[in-house]
Length: 247
Length: 247
Image (cartoon, rainbow over all chains, first blue to last red; front, side, top):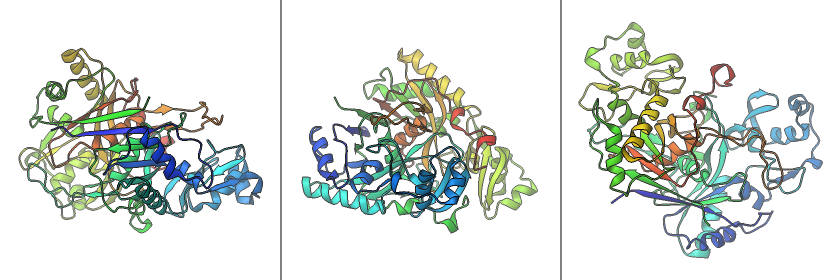
């Protein structure tokens, strides 16, 4: 028997607005593809989760601080102020580029604050306050609506140190293993596998991003065939500052 | 029409040894699943590529330097010597952990030197000398044997700054886009997408790792349904040291 994984993009989801019932939209889209199955992992782009949760600010409501004006370069200083408001610590600043540590502990460009795709000009989208809670709420709603236990990953696309380009990462996780720990297990040749922790939730997010369109409206994907059920969290994927060799 | 990606693990591949014809083994395994198709991306674990290329050293042949002995902690200093031989620059040292920049520019633990799965005790596996060339050679061999144009990614699993666990990354690429550049393209709301470079080859490697077994013998995967054909390279995925905020 062959190992096979399938990844479906969930299309035809209308633009999500604050207060929308995202889980129902996901279920509707999944129904058009035959419905969800036990063990599926539903990966949802952070942007639509944040929109549904109303994590949106209007630039018109923002007054920039002197620090925001200084860091703005040719960017709107109000935009930079919103990034600073979401930043626990500035990791690197090369204006207008800002790499922030967010309150969740994520290290990413612009503290995850995003302008593109926001409905209407002059609005910015913030990361969810608690992405694990967001994932858990979506998971519970999907279960209520379908009776099926699935895993949920709330994903975003982050840059990395040393490597070019962004890849999908898991911000929030529910019903899925986040880190698969192979420590102490042995490979076929009998070697103990040391230090082998696989960030499986990040790999699920990266795989899903192959179908999540930046330009087309595909804000979620279903991954089928991965035995990834578990009780991981997005928090686990963050190296605590005191153990991190790179903060 | 729905976006769908399928990922198959290539199973039943015998243990690869130095000089083995890896492409033929991949073709045989793919034939058992119905064969390769135009546009498929074949992701091959670095370890089997390195084995086929004879990138193996025997610890018995190594004499450790004083630096290797100092950095070894409770590890075999000959093992550390092999890592140092593969290291262009030590990025972080917390013995026995060594984060190296390799001659290719990759930043990773132990310069990518791996003990597990090596045939026989006392041998270590090194990264390919030129993973892009490795990928190109496999791609050409697959084409010769099947008449089908596929993409090839030689993958490994690297740790990251700030985030726990490893994820699949592309070391070598042939016939595949490495970095998908959305700069200047507009999303549905009419926003120009700035700074949006997606490391699609790394996402393919991460997706494949969901079926590449660390414990079972699945050293390669076929990804079908991604429009990723292109002329990218693994080199492109490395941020040049002088432009890197994190070296």
